Image (cartoon, rainbow, N blue to C red; front, side, top):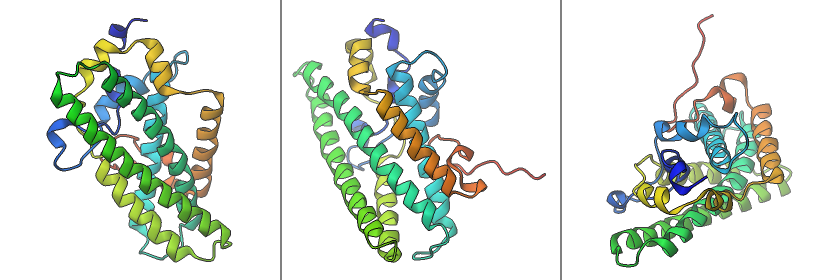
Length: 242
């Protein structure tokens, strides 16, 4: 596969890439429509673009389930405690994967985009800073989750505060925007590059599946992640009237 043949789906892989026009606001992320080109490939033979799309759509489903659970309960209410814990466990690993893959893209673009294109390189510097912010926030959530479990789940209030704070940060960072780097990823990245970027293997796929299943098992039917769209906008699931 040549670099040109990934055109039209590469945009969906850059879930937290920061558009240059949005740099001042710190917004990041991509639309539901931009995800479809990749996620529709999931049932085909394995390829890195399909795996990137699958991971990111399912991460969005977990975020939507988490958002709905937080909306249903006030701060400190523990009626959805197992679900919040499972969501936190999923997000720690999933955001680590997202950071790895997006920084792989970031580093390849920084290497290959001509240095005279100062605007792109300035945008990549800003992206690196925002990725660092997301990375730090995920580390704080991971520590809060560890402390909650080490306490025998006795310190729910502290954990609840931590996951609500994390959810606010991630929601702010991942607002959908158009990818300003598509021209370069289309022209400069080959199928081998996407395999390197995705860094996916049987272990990463199995880990994601185990953590996703844990979220689903902890959720009531209306809050199961598979009940949500997995597209941007935090859409609620469709509720049957029957």
